[in-house]
Figure 1 (cartoon, one colour):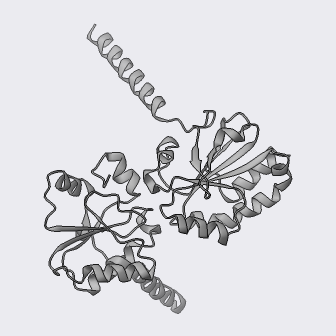
Figure 2 (spheres, helix red, strand yellow):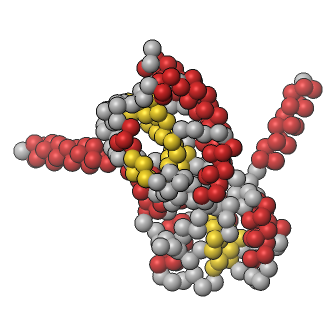
Figure 3 (cartoon, one colour):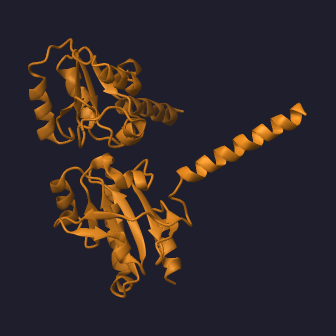
Length: 139
Length: 169
């Protein structure tokens, strides 16, 4: 009985630890973002790539944020941006569960107090969820 | 009469759907593997067709893909296990990287002591090879026979070792 209780407590703790730093409402639908880019309605948004390449049109290339150097680059880049600005980050290398870049970047945005931080919802990768749909790219 | 018409319509829709599906999927066992012409780290061009006559394991990977990186020591073991076949020009591994950063790619090759052929266009997911091989997720691999026909798809771990062992028995 006691063992079960301890096990379930640990289970809960590890589940909490694994919880992603974003919630459902902070996931940005790629179709919505693509439509905004096409209509040139992105002047109030900052789109940041925290992965291997800034594929999305108009996005800023920070580099993979699992590297501390790039995380610092992101911190510096965000210095002059108002905290209420809508910031959308994306990586797109791999499915969310395997991506090493989105969590450190999203945590940093929250740590710095960005109230409108979003993660682009690319559940599989940038190829399947963006390129294959012919959404706008940087070249 | 109406029933006959309906049945005929359904038949045509089904036939059309099947044709479209058949056209979309090219990377299937029994199909010919699309040609790959990409650069090695030294910039020289390399083509898959130059390996005709050998069994080739085409490993699609990238340094930003953690499971792919984890698989490289296994591939090294495999390459050592079948080193005689490599010498006899019966077997080869072709590593196709979807990296963007050349430095990361080269560093990983050094770190893992990769001695098989490595090519890349450094175009990340935009690489035309990702489209040609219908890759939706990494790691991904295909095994092609001496005539360039796909004989296995996405085998990893013991499945991959067993397949090659049985092939070269």
